[in-house]
Image (cartoon, rainbow, N blue to C red; front, side, top):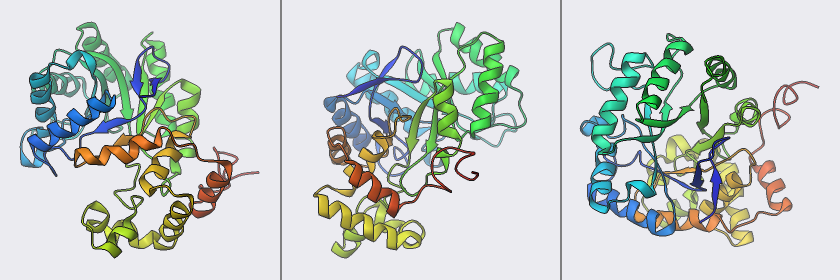
Length: 326
């Protein structure tokens, strides 16, 4: 398994991350454990979740399933474990956001569900415009000093949010943001304008989620023709149909070079210098095999150029302001 450092930290992680949003919402505890078992066998030791995952069917089921797996296997010391705070977990007015109260209370609740004493990467799931950065970092410092978290990360931040957050952390002589988890794939490249450049400048690792755009880049049209099930078919009207011409060209290119669309989509992300580890969303252990093949797949310049033609970057391409100015 290839490994890399998480942003500017000394922590190393596998180049693929197991995302667990489907745990509790799409698959049960036994299937979730099978995914984690297979990931561990393959050398994937980076596991990402959030307190809200599975909440509609229970209280943080994704975290609970991971916790029961850690209990069963005793592998906590071998896993880099990430979770998130922000989303409302109840109707209580203070049970949401990034107030110091909620950050600390959410961490304690996640620790109980995960059945662990510490969280390696505690991520802010969204920006909270109503809470100042000194309050956020005070809470994160408290958790770090108590040994309950090791690093703080962000998710769904704009580039200027990363800059403001890191500037505030620097004033407090605190490490600050070490990773940003953002939606990034061939069909959604907006983060190339400012988020990726900001992350690179600040030493923040990038963890792209939805690398297959909810299955649209997984060979969706082929699966539809073959009558196969899965997310690509389930979300066809809203995810596939608006991009059908591009996806047709993409699947034709993949067939021409003899690679599965999943492998190509993940390999493209891995080719981006800012990317630390794509966050996968498997619903079964077998869905880890094609992403794994991406680790040993090098896309030539001709293929990368063809992908840019099929899925053009925003504006002129590259970072702003050149992407939209001279």
